[in-house]
Length: 284
Image (cartoon, rainbow, N blue to C red; front, side):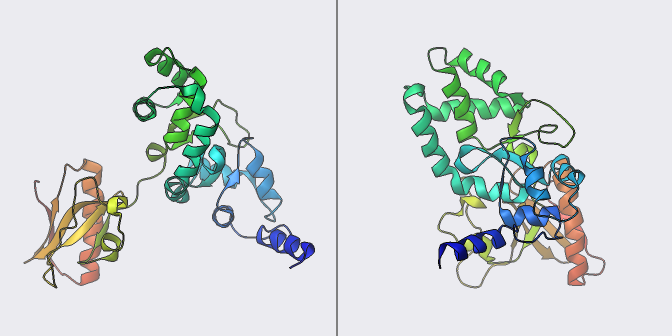
C-alpha cells in the first residue's frame, strides 16, 4: 500500500471519511479508547465522527457509569466503555508500570512501590480523593520521598477512575479519583454448567478464581455441581437437588448479592422448565 492508501484506510477505520449514525457507546467500543486529558476533547472527537451527535448522550454514559475516564494507554487519561476498562487496564499494566519507572524511577528512591500502591488503594476505597489529597497522605507516611513521584505511583499501579462532573458536558470540577473497581458496575451473577471453559481454559486462572481457590471438579465425567460467578469471580457452587436449586457460597455474600443470585436462579429454573422448584442458599 502506498501512503495515500494507508491514509484512506486509517481515515475509514476511524470514521473520518464519512460520518456514521451509530450510537455513541458503539463508537466508543469501536475506537477502544479516546484521549481525554483535555476533559471535553472526546465530545469534539465524537462530533466529528457521528452525524447528529448530541453531547448529552456521552454525558449520560459517563454519569451512568457506562463510560469511564481513567489512566490507561501510555499512562494518560482515556475515555472508554466501563466494560472495556476492566479488560484494558490489566492488559496494558506492564507497559504502564514501565512508563512509571522511566519517569519516576530515580525520584521514588527506595520506597516500596507495592506498599505505596496498597496505601493509595486503601485511601481511595475509603472515599474518593483528589491527587493533592493523596499526595498529602502519602508524604505523611513517606516524608523523605518525592511527593509527586509518590502520588503518581498510585495512578500507575492502581486502576483508577475520574468521577463526574469531570468530563461531563456543561459541568466543571476537579479530577477526583476512586478505584476503577469501585466505580464501574459489578459483573452480573452468572450460573456456569459443569466443566465450563471459562474456568478451565487458562493457565492463569486468577482472572476468575480468587487466590487459593481451585476449580471444584472431579476427574472424568463425574461432575455434579455447576459453579456460580458473582461480580465475575467463582463464589459458589450450585446443583439441582430434588425440588430445590441449592447454592453453596464459598464465602460471605452481601444481601444485595444474595438478592441478585436469587433472581438469576429463578430465571435459570424457568429456562430448565423446573416447575415448582425452589431456590435455597445454604447458610440462610
